[in-house]
Length: 183
Image 1 (cartoon, rainbow, N blue to C red):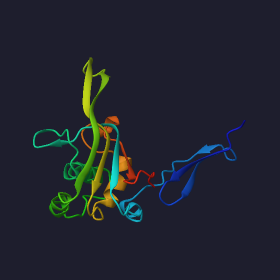
Image 2: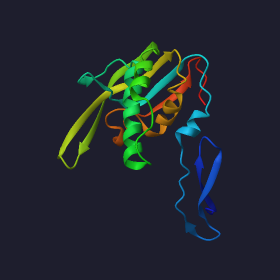
Image 3: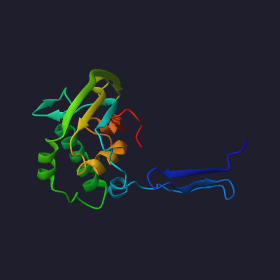
Image 4: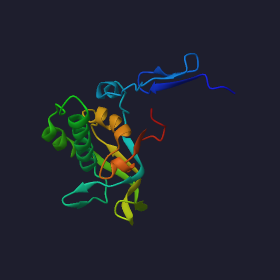
């Protein structure tokens, strides 16, 4: 079997761009970006949404790690992550009403908490020691008006949320609360 082509897919617009073609034997830099505007076009489930924390998620709140994933805590940490990414790797800071969104996030209720506390160990060559990282893993179901938060929640599936996101922690996926896969 001969490799003929590799495409990079943009998951929300059903677009592909060539990365490699055997025809010209070139590798091209091609990274179809996902934007918050793309995410805003994804329909929000009518009923609640489940956030499935796939890797340990470390949410800081009030000076410590939160063991209960209240929506306002998850959203606050997500907004902070997206803001930092926009500032340092994008076109500038996010142009959103941070205080208003965070205040409104308190109205979204955690209706089912199927998370547990889990540990992950990694070796740090720089520090020459093993490090144990803990965090939430499992699913949390939220109900309430999620419309203002939805594009950011969708976008966060690619950026992760919380401390240690650069190490792969805080990865999550969204599902409709009824249990059907999303999207």
